[in-house]
Length: 163
Image (cartoon, rainbow, N blue to C red):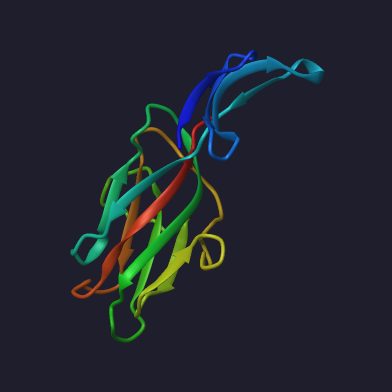
């Protein structure tokens, strides 16, 4: 089973899987199309952030935009492998521009995470959460939990699209 990198006539490059007999990924390009526009191929990137153990605002995690330009968060997920185990403890996450310790809830707003589970910003976005969000260069995504995360474990995943 082999994969080959192929250069295409439109300037794009792709990964071709011989076993599958098809293109597995495509990048670049810039071929003109109708209306004077061009088509270019981009892949999304996932940023994984492990949960921390601190209580309070942005105590669960805080990550600065790792890209030199503004990007878009197409989806945000919380993979909780061990929940709080008590009461109605919640997690919020969002893009913030002030500092790495600011509270954000514009991706997921107060999802209850007392047990293991998967939560996202489409199904579980809450009142202020959005299904997509601009992430400006130099700003953060922070995660806050309502109580000390003694038993909480897991990671946040951000699907990032670079324009």
